[in-house]
Amino acid sequence: MINNLWFVAPLVMGIVLGIIFFGGLWLTVQKTIASDYVALWFFSSLLVRTGIVLTGFYWICGDSWQHWLAALVGFSLARWVIIRLTRSAEAIQEGNNAP
Image 1 (cartoon, rainbow, N blue to C red):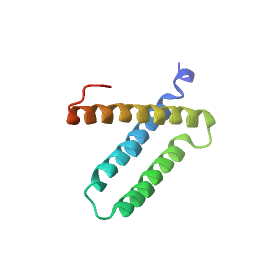
Image 2 (cartoon, rainbow, N blue to C red):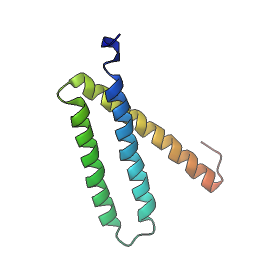
Image 3 (cartoon, helix red, strand yellow):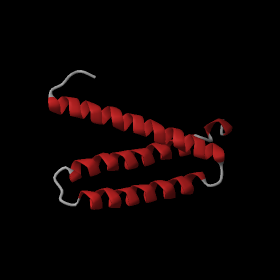
C-alpha cells in the first residue's frame, strides 16, 4: 500500500505550488492594470513566484525523478484549474456565457 502512495505528497505539493505560481501571476496581471510601475510588478512577481516554486520543488522532491514527475503533473493540473477558473470569472464579468 505504501509503495502505491509514493506520489501523493509530491502531487499535492505540485498542485499547491501551481496554485501559488499561476494564482500569483493572475493577481499580478490584475494589479498592473492600474499601476504606473508595470515592469517592476512583473519582474518582482516573477522573482518571488519562481523562488517559491523552485524551493518548494527542491524541498519536496529532492533527487527522486519520480517525485519530480508527480510534482510537475500536479503543477500542470493547477495551471489547468487556474485557467478554467479565471476564464469563467472573466466570462461572468463580461456577461458572456460562451466558453
